[in-house]
Amino acid sequence: MTTHSKRVWLVCYDIANDKRLRKVYKLCRGYGEHLQYSVFRCVLSDLRLAEMKARLLDVVDERQDQVMFAFLGTSDADRAWRIDTIGIPFDDPERVVRVV
Image 1: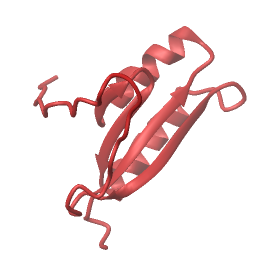
Image 2: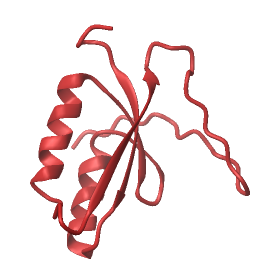
Image 3: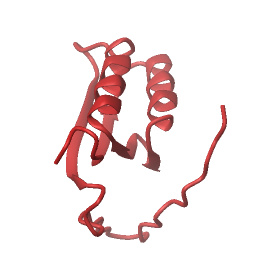
Image 4: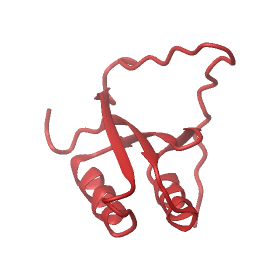
């Protein structure tokens, strides 16, 4: 796998302050697909992952907040990741291009 290939990450966060929570949500929205409250699926190159983490470090309070990155596989794998649910079924979000 080269540094140019993309990897799929499940990004989950628990933020203690509402103002920081809104900032983290907006930041993550720019990097991935919002799956559930405080949960995003992000397909990122190593460079974009490092950029995202650096930007998050500027927002979170490392003594009170937590952001977790769970590696789900490479983006070129044939849907290597799988999401199972109990209750309401998972609806894979459509890809929408947003120009900001």
